[in-house]
Image (cartoon, rainbow, N blue to C red):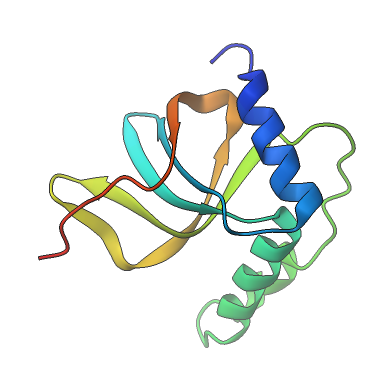
Length: 119
């Protein structure tokens, strides 16, 4: 999108202001379908920091995520928690991942999780 969808920006702002991770959303970005729950950026960064800190190989990258956002104004990104990329009839990864998507890059979206088969 050359101009971010105002409704999507409003949804992201509500997630940020309410500090809730219960909003389910499915987006298409760069040809990929990502489905999951939105999380406030601070909560998303904290969880990524925890995962990286626990990794022997990736621990040195944790401090890059353990910083305040420092951004004022409307949200520019969606932060997915427990999310999956839909590939054919399955969701990848099975356990859900942490994805950050630029709102400008979302070409289509819908409220709710997109169903998939994990068999």
